[in-house]
Amino acid sequence: MKEVYVVGVGMTPFGRHLDKSLKQLSASAVEDAVQDAGCRRDQIDVAFFGNVAQGFMHGQMSTRGQIALLPDGFDGIPIHNVENACATASSAFHLALMQLRAGAAEVALAIGAEKLFSTDKAKMFSLFDSAWDIETVEENFDLLRRLGEGMEPPPGTTSPKPYSVFMDVYAAFGRQIMQRHGITQRQIAAAAAKNHTHSVHNPRAQYRAAMTTDEVLQAPPITFPLTLPMCAPISDGAAAMILCTDDGLARLGADRARAVRVRASAMRSASRRSGDDLSRHITRLTALAAYEEAGLGPDAMHVAEVHDATAIGELIQTENLGLCEEGQSGHAAESGETTIGGRIPVNPSGGLESKGHPIGATGIGQIFEIVGQLRGECGARQVHGARFGIQENGGGLWGVEEAAAHVGIFERVH
Image (cartoon, rainbow, N blue to C red; front, side, top):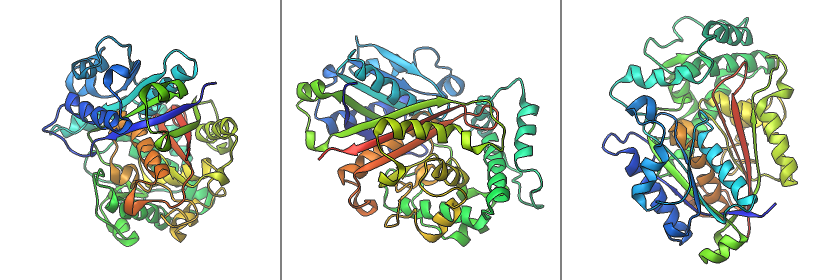
C-alpha cells in the first residue's frame, strides 16, 4: 500500500454558529486546510464530504457535498457524500485514505461539517432518535436496561428537560462498568473535570472553563450517573484535512517536515454479541486491527483523542484501546495518568465534552488535534515528545455497542 500523509488541517471553532451557514463553516475549515498544506484547490483530485443532519435540520438532501464545495472552487472533481452517524468524518477520512492507497488519486480532501444548533430544541434533540433501529425502540431500551440491572438511578438524578437518547445509552454503559469494575461516579466526574481543564488552552473549544471534580458532581443531573458537564453539548462546526501520497507531496511541494504519516486506519461495524462479552467490543476489535496494521502496540502511543460523547465513553474507550488495564480507567483518570503531563494524555483538546460535538465533523476534529500534537503546535496543551497518536471515534448503536467505529494511528515523520 502507498504511504499516505496528512499535510494540511483546518477547523472552525466548535460551538453555536446561528449566524453562519453550513457552506460558510465548510469554506472556513477548507481554507485553513489549504493554507496549512500550502496548496491550491485545483491540485486536489477528489473530496469526501461528511454530514449527518443537514437533511433533517434544513431539508438539504442528496448532494450536500456538492452544494457546499462547488461554490468554493472544487467544481469538476469527484465529490462523495458520507454519512455514518458520529463516525461520519472518520469515515470520510478513511475513504479518502483508501482512494490514495489504491493509487486512484494523489491528493484528497476529507471534510466533515454540521449545523446542529437550533432555537427549536425539541427538533434538535429528536435528531438523535434515528441513530439506532427505529423499528425496535422498546427492545433497544430493554437491552440497555439489562446492562445496568441491579443499579437503579437514585431519585432526582434524571433531568426533566429534553436530552439526547444517547445519554440513556451511555448511562446504561456507565452503570454496567460501575457494577462490573467498581468504577465510581466520582471517577467518571474526574475524567470530565480533566477534559474541561484541558479545554482552557484550546481556542477552538466550545467550553473553555476549568472545572473541579466536585463541581462536575454537583452540576445538574442528566441521567444517573451523568451530570451536565459529563456530556457533550450540541455543536456546529467543520473540520477538514488534505491527505496525499509521496507523489502528491512532491506535486504540492508541501513541507515534508510537517507531514504526519497515517500508520493505520481501521473501521468496523457492530457484531452480534452479548452485553457481558466486552472482549468482543467493536472498539476493542477495531483497535486490535489498527495496531496490527501499524505494527505498534498501545504502549507506543503518546497521546489519544477518544470519543467521549460522555465521560463514561472516555473510560470505556481508554480500556478498549489498551491504554490501561481492564477496570482501571477510572483510577487512571482520577490519578492523573490521562492528564497532560501524565502517563498517557487522553483528550488534550478537551474532548467532545468541552471542545464540542458537531456530529459530522467530530472525527476529523479529533485528527486535527492529533496532527497538531505530533507537529508540536499545541502550545500550552502540548504533549511533549509525542511521536505516535491514536484517535477513536464511534457512532450510532446496534445491539449493545456502537454501530460503527474507527481507530486511526498517526506518526510524526520528522
